[in-house]
Image 1 (cartoon, rainbow, N blue to C red):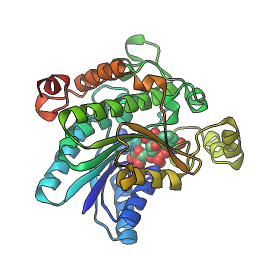
Image 2 (tube, rainbow, N blue to C red):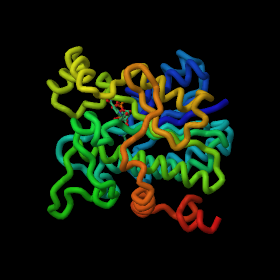
Image 3 (cartoon, rainbow, N blue to C red):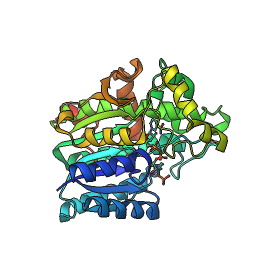
Image 4 (cartoon, rainbow, N blue to C red):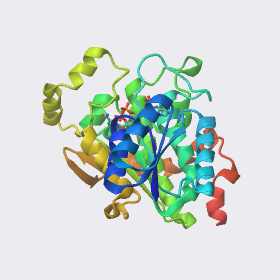
Length: 327
Ligand SMILES: NC(=O)c1ccc[n+]([C@@H]2O[C@H](COP(=O)([O-])OP(=O)(O)OC[C@H]3O[C@@H](n4cnc5c(N)ncnc54)[C@H](OP(=O)(O)O)[C@@H]3O)[C@@H](O)[C@H]2O)c1
C-alpha cells in the first residue's frame, strides 16, 4: 500500500491533508510529530474513518537527534515491510514563534531549526528510501515573497543565510523579528526544495520535489502564540473580507489540506517537480515564487550551510556537491 509520511499531521492543514489522503486515496499514513497523545487521537480517528493503516512516529523537527532517530525508524519499518513503500514525504510541520527567542537543543533558533533545518535533514535522510515516483513536498508560505502583501504584512525576509538565522540574537546581536524569522524560514524551504530537485535529477533519482503555499488559513493553530484578541480577530468574517480586499493569498483548512493531499498523491502533479504550487481562494495553481527563491548561487551556498549545521555525514547523503561531482 502506498504510504505518506506527514510531519505535524495531527492538526491544522496537516490533519486535513491526512484525512484526504486516507479517505480519498486510501493510502496508509505515518503521522510524525512531538505530541504523542494528540497524534494517537488523530491516528485513531483516521483508522476509524478511512480504514487505513496509521502509524505514529516521534519527531521533533527542531532536534537533529530526533530527526535522525525518526528517519532510522522509518527506514527500519520499510526494511521489515511494516511500511510497504514511502510514496510521499510531507514536510508540513511549522509555525511562527513569537515571544522571547528560543534555541533548540542543538543551539539553533527554533523557527529556523523546526521549520527548515529539521525538514532539510529529514529529506536528505529519506529521499534514497522513497518509491521511484515518490514526492517530497515542503510547506512554504506566501510570506516568503516581500513583493506580496503576505510578505509585507508578516515581515520582509532577510538574507537566507543559515548561520545568521540559526544564531540570531546571540552574543548581543540584534534579534531578527518573529515575523521575519518565519518568512525567511519559508524562503529557505523553497530554496532548499528547488535545490533538492536539481540535486536529485543530477543523482539520477526520479523523486519529485514541490514547494507548497497553503495560503492564509486562520482556522488552524498557527497563531497560537499570538495574544488572544489577535487570534480572535484573525478568525472573523471582517478579517477575511479585508484580507481578500488587500490581495492576501487565502486558504482554508479543508481546501489547503486537500490541495496538499493532491500534490502528494494525484497523478496530475507527477510532473510538478521544482515548481511552486499555491492554494488561493479555492484554486490550486502553479505560480512563481519570489525572485530571490530562484537564485541558484544562494541556494548552493544555503545547502552547504545546512549540511554543516545538520552535521550531515558523507554516509548519510548522496547529494553533497562532492558526491554529485564524482557521480
Ligand atoms: N495557517 C496559515 O495561515 C499558514 C499559512 C502559510 C503556511 N502555513 C504553514 O502550514 C503548516 C501547517 O501549519 P498550520 O497552519 O496547520 O498550523 P498548526 O495547526 O499549528 O499545525 C502545525 C503543526 O506543526 C507541528 N509542529 C510545529 N513545530 C514542530 C516541531 N518542532 N516538531 C514537530 N512538529 C511540530 C505542530 O505540532 P504540535 O501540536 O506538537 O505543536 C502542529 O501539528 C506550517 O508549516 C505553517 O507554517 C500556515
